[in-house]
Image (cartoon, rainbow, N blue to C red; front, side, top):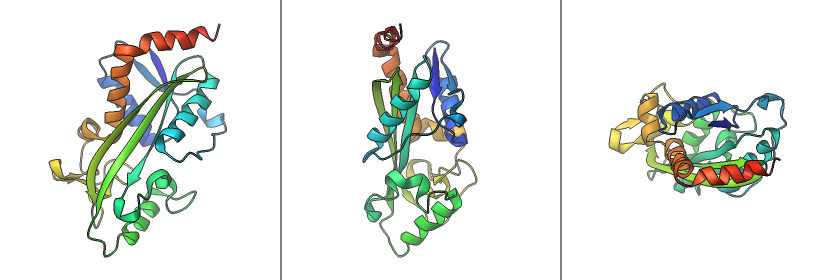
Amino acid sequence: MILYACSSNRGKLNEFALAGRESTIPELDIQPLTGLAEIAPPEENGSTFEENAIAKACYYSGFTQEPVFADDSGLVVPALDGAPGLYSSRYAGPHATAAENNALLLKNLTDIDHRAASFVCVVALARAGVLLTTARGTVDGRILHSMAGTGGFGYDPLFFYPPFNASFGDLGERTKFSISHRGNALRELFRWLQHAGSARLQNAASSLH
């Protein structure tokens, strides 16, 4: 089974590939959507992670006959009224780097003791413009006062996971994926594919003929 991933984020693509290798679905092959760089991206103007993920998956599914999935994810910090939230990748501006986003997060948390945070990921699966399902994953932790670790990407070096006494930046790829928001969402998606998804995929495919 081929699933096309609709993302140009190298860190996410690495995790998607890892998910495919670790899945128990026979011959699951997760690949970046062909020609994605040449496709104008849709607007991400939803008010929830679900809305954005669904919009992206349905849009990109119009460029291939195979099923595609898209994710929308971010860091939610209650002390900042949920920010960065939907704007996690552009928290410090439309073209912000991870370092700039992290710096702004630390600045906005100056003198704030309650630093609880959650990573959230929603994955939407679509085929031929039809939404098939969504899956949601979360992981809870807290924001450190300075960067820790050189692994991961985005806010990972600032996100401390108490059960492992380490930041996501300190964890290896497989260890992080075993408990991460994106790993949890993809595992939920794979469970759906194994138990309920085959018929839905076939029905969506029949609309192409």
